[in-house]
Length: 136
Image (cartoon, rainbow, N blue to C red):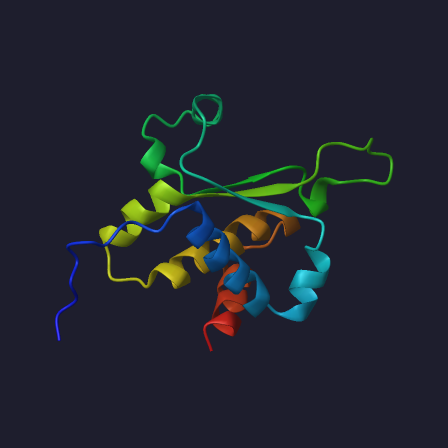
């Protein structure tokens, strides 16, 4: 039976928060325990300041961003700063989702794991291993 798309709307910020929360809850417990202080924010697109800082012209090219100091670069002598944050950019993720065949929840989880992985200084292989554990 075909889906009736005539009244469908794109998932909003609250929908993305729910997707991110589901992805977070599926992460391995030891990963969540280590990342417990990270703040996760959902925004439509990255700000112009962020895009300029990263030298990115098209805001749809940035699906997520880790902002903070990764654990492999922190020291006990560091002064208290703003909390480490992961931004998930809804419209950029939707754009990527619309151009492929990946399930939206899986794509949100992928971006979340990748950005939190930056906090830990993980390699791409480390992040793939974590992602495989949440997709089981």
